Length: 460
Image (cartoon, rainbow, N blue to C red; front, side):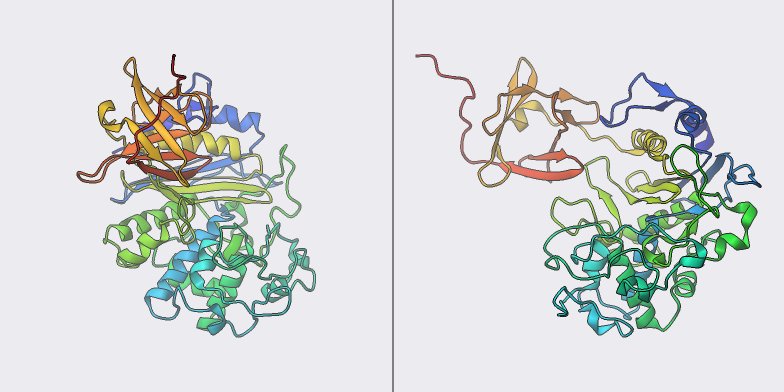
């Protein structure tokens, strides 16, 4: 498999309208999108579990000594740092140093998590990794090098810190709320439990074993290779003063890396989930990309898309000056990572990811129409009636008029007027279940024993 034969043409014809998941006729080359969104540099890598990798750089690093972006140019990995930190935490779980469901107070010695009344809640490592611990809602914007606080100051909200103290603010384990504060606590916990500075711990625990040679959590890393670092840019192409910001919250957003290194980690997790990794065992890898909230989109440090035939997992990232993503499609054994040195890189990255979805998602066979008709119940007796009219499936949810679903070649059905995907899935010889997906959240409706009533008025 020669990835360049796939991706050079794909990058020359990227879809500019990706929300529907369908290829539109409005396409543009990567270079055109870089110009439209004023993104100075882009790096992309594609790899397979077999070890094959293709990588390329486009544009320039930016700054006074700007050079061409190459496959070895390091970018801020932003929140993908969480994904990598979670892998390290699970290795410590595997070694018995940590336990997923033990109170984190058992490990923290330098600082303790409190609620607003000064009480110490029971929070677990699993909840930190899954963003379900209910900690302060925080996004870390970074600091100028001479203004950066320590991690303890970030946790306490003291010194030059620009974010509030990290506190327990929601009922632990009750719901998902994405926040960098969870990973600041994780960082301190890992340091306290091992007695090792976080950047050194991650170097020996994860980066070296996974062969991520162009990556580091050390905030001095970009200074050690100034000609191999992409400098960050605000929207519109304005450069970040000093080139980039320092992130003392390194587990949450301080990793420097390349797309090639990032996909190496995702491919290692995919191998681990198949039982083929020498680093992480199968059960922990499976936990990593299993949603921790029913119908949710996040596992343990991992964004999860669990649609049948379209499964992918990984992480996205946004820091001041940078955007990125790294995902693996486990059913095809392929990973794609891309990084930009601009806050306006999202639209461009969305087009690249959509191309990867179409290329590496595996299709499923559409269910016979006669096998899926009937009533399904979503929740609290919320009925959904599926019927066949003139050879087409009709969909009628509670109190709504029936509509004809649009059939997609990959086994999906799309609602013509709503952001709604429908699939019919079957396990062994069991009846089909109906899978609904809206705004990235998957819900399941099961067959009802009650017969559906006609949605049309009775003539009398």
